[in-house]
Length: 496
Ligand code: SAH
Image (cartoon, rainbow, N blue to C red; front, side, top):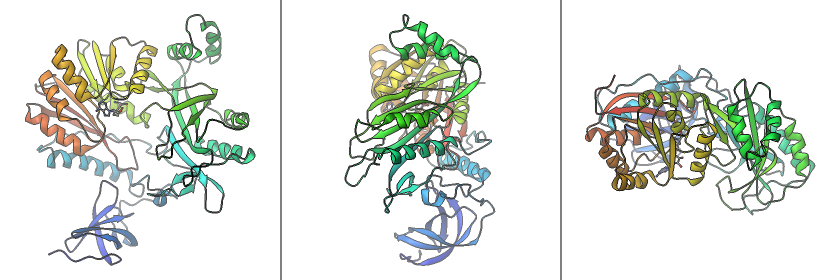
């Protein structure tokens, strides 16, 4: 018998688990409550905000017994922001929760028994890891210029320069942009009526491997004109040949509701004096939409793209490029994928959902031939550019849906693979793709997943068709948030 719970009722619950949205889960006489801001191990008085028949949502009214896993969240704004759902939980406990989530999904949905799990790969320092930040700009209700983040599930902008997941320099950049806007009377965008100019500030940073003698870049550039048709091409070619110290390159991109940017020189002067800023861009988005970026970009000052390295490879990142946001963990994730691929130099590898080809290029260094498939044409352009710039010639890329390109190529050309890598979005792989992979009969399938539930569903299908799960390693790509990434090795054969 489940208790009849009503909105605004209060009750005392012990939090026994956490939801995938980061709420604490507690039970009151058979009734399940999802309690915002409560963490596993807490005993709380919760006030019901929304009641369904057998479950409901509640907010934390009073913390009666704090969980032993509770920590003081570093960010004072974390409750208002909602971006970091797990900040009040110790990092060890966050990792344990994520590992358990992967295991239980593989058991419950995937039907596995005794999952061969390796411990989750966490971060030594789980803050300040993001290389990309997007700050909305607007007016508060008193008409003050504000930039920061949207209060959880609203479009109210909270003025905040600090995000503990982002780089410390971001605050300085935001202050410079706001000072420019005030000095030059540039209006922020108003969502309600579609007026004003500056919508968002996008900041991206990359760890570039620079030549120890930085003046080399400009010297070479002057001489490179004959060899390369554009400055961009020349820059690209010589960037990547350089080795030496690591240096951070920062891009600042103003997203504007219109082409004109008044007195851009004032903005440029302020931003270029900030150490690391090498690229100042403008992205034009005149649509009345929640989508942050428009399609048009122009360089206001400096380079049109920054360099970001993962392992020994360097990638060009422009305002519109997709790039993994946690470079430290990405290297570990790709390292795992590479290990699981078990390459010796003779293999043909298909990398499906390849994005800008990051995993493909990692694999190409150890494989005979890599083929990448990706739905976004711009990403494939980037992939080709990155392959050339890293002197990789054994990687070829195709635009299209993996579930269409791969079955078509299998039917028409009889393609085969020793190793197939998939890294799909949350919804996982389409069955048309999985059934073709089975026909291609690779020795190894390396599944990189950002959603354990769809991973488990797809694993079940592959296991039903003769594959066996050999090893699973979760990687914490997004500390403080509920997300977890997993790499899973499957094979038909006895390996290692
Ligand atoms: N492996 C890449 C990108 C992974 S993100 C990396 O590590 O950087 C998943 C990618 O799948 C995105 O680039 C997305 O554009 C692409 N994608 C989404 N649906 C797809 C489909 N049906 N076929 C091929 N690619 C798809």
